[in-house]
Image (cartoon, rainbow over all chains, first blue to last red; front, top):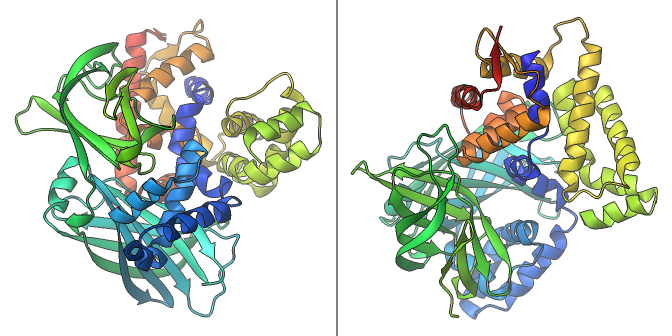
Amino acid sequence: MNSDIMIDAIGMISDSVILDAKEYEIKASSFRKRRFIAVLAAVILALALSVTALAAAGALQGILGWFGDLWESATGKVLSEAQARTIMDLTGAVGASAEDNGITVTAKSVTLGDSGAVLLFAVSIDNTALSADAEYSFDAFLCDVGELPGDRGVSQSFYKVDTAANEAYIVVKYDGGLPTADIMRGDCIMTVQLSGLVESGTDGSVLREGQWEFEIALDADLLPASIYVESATVEGRAFVSDLLPGMPVSLEIWDISITSTGISFAMDAGYEGGWSITAALTDGTEVRTSTGSGYLMPDGKTYANSFVWEAPISLSELDYIEFYGARLQVGGE
Amino acid sequence: MDDSGIVELYWARSESAIAETASKYGKYCFTIAFNILASREDADESVNDTYMSAWSSMPPHRPSVLSTFLGKITRRISIDKWRRRNAGKRGGGEVRLALDELSETVPSGCDIDDTVEKAELARMIDNFLTALPDTERRVFVCRYWYLDPIASICRQFGFSQSKVKSMLRRTRGKLRVYLEKEGIFNEF
C-alpha cells in the first residue's frame, strides 16, 4: 500500500523533471516532420560558409542537421550562421567503416566539446531497404578514452533514416567531465565498440547481432576556444550532504571556463549539485545545460564542475551566464 | 503543429485536435501505457481514453507542456487499469517490479502518514529529485515515472544492468532517508 502511494505521488512530479529524463526520445519523434526544414536550413548555412568549410560540408552536413534539430527543440529557432560555423569548426570527418553479419556501420564524424564528444554513425543492412518509419539503436556501446571507464556518460539517440542513401543515422554521445578534456588535449584515440542493432516497434530484442569497433583520433585542434573568468560570486545551493537539498546561497566560484559547448568552474567542495545555469545570447535566446558532472580534486577541498549546453553556441553571440538568477556578464555591455 | 496550436484546437472544440495529438504524441503515450500494461490492446485502449480525457479537460485546462499533460493522464489511466485487472492478484510486469522496488523507500515497520497528501509527497519527491545529479535523476524518472524496463534504461544510457540496478538502489535509499527527515512516516 505504501508503494502504491509512492508510485502515485511520483506520477505528480513536475513537468520539467519528467521531460528532462526523456529529452532525446521526445525530440526524435516530435521533430521528425520538421527535420527536413531544419536540415535544409543547416545546408543553406553550410553553403554560406567559406570555401574551405564548403569542402567539408558534405561530410559534416549530417551532424549539422542533428544539431539543428537539437537547437530547434531547445529554443524553437534555427541555427545561426555563427553557430553553424562553430559546429563545423568543432567537427572532423571520420569516414571509417566496419562490417559484421551483413551490417555496415560507418563513423561519419566526430564533434569535440571540452568535456566530451558527439559521434555520428551511419548504418546500412545488406539487401535490406530501411523503412523511413523505423528507428534504430545499438544494443550496447562503449567508448574508451585514455584510461577513463568506457561506461562513463555514454548515451545514444536515433537521428533519422535517409531512404535515398538507405542508411540509418545514430548519434553516440560521450560525456566524460573535466578529466576527459585534459586527456583530449593530448591528441588521444577514442575506441568505440558497438554491438547488436535494435529496431523500434519490436519488443526490444536485437534485430541482428554484430560487433563494430572503431579507433577514432580526437584532434585537439577541434577543441573549442574558451572565455576565461578568474572568479565570480554566484547563486548556488548548499548541500551539507548529498541527501538534503539546501537553501540557495551565494558562493565564490573560480577558474571559470566558458566554451561553445559548455561551462566549467571550481568551487569549495562543501557545495554541490542542484545547479541551474543558463547561457543568454544577444538575441534573447536562453540555453540551458543538458548534462553535468563534478569531481573532487586531489586536494580534497575543491570541486571541479563541468556542464554541457543543450546545443553548441557561438561565443560571439553570448551575452551573459545566469546562475540561479545571479548574472555573470561575458559579452559587451 | 506546435503544442499551442493543438491546445487551441481543443478549445475550439475541433475534432482534428485528437488527430493532431495522436500524430504528435500517440507513440509517446503508447510507450507509457505499454510499459505499464504489457498488452498492445490494453495500451491502445488507454491511449484512446487519454484522448477522451484530454478532450474533456480542455477547456478549462490550458496545459503549458502538452506532452507531460498527456503523459500524466496516460500513466494514471494505465495504472488504474492495471490495478483493476490485477485486483486481488499479485499481477506482474514493470508496475509490480517497480512497486516492489519502491517498498524500499519506506522503512520497515512504518506507514506513510495518512495526513500527508499525495501532492505534498510529490512536492517532496520533486525537491529530492531536483537535487540529484542529472544521470541519477533521469534514471530514477525513467524507471518510476515512465516505468521503463531496466533493459531499456541500460540501452538509453549505455549502462550495464548491474550499474542501473545499483544506481536505483542507492537513489531509493537516499529517498528513504530524505523522507524520514521530512517526517512523513508513522511507526505501526
